[in-house]
Image (cartoon, rainbow, N blue to C red):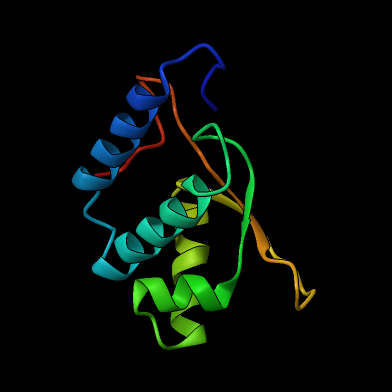
Length: 111
């Protein structure tokens, strides 16, 4: 996770540069990350803070129609260390997400 004194714009740029070079990601992963970014940025202050978002809204924004595909993409984004995810089974509360921002020189990237 990034240190608190790091430039937020630099964090965001580095995060998206990492996405751009990762050949494991498909358009569904990228669409879901964009949906997470859209809903996360609308309610929080820092890029790497926890936020909540509902599956229904994320699926709609990212144009994913299948719950199985949604959960597969979420599972892979967690595995690839792009996000942390804590599901919520409460109908009125969204699941908890966090963007995982790595410092330069992170060793777990696979392009």
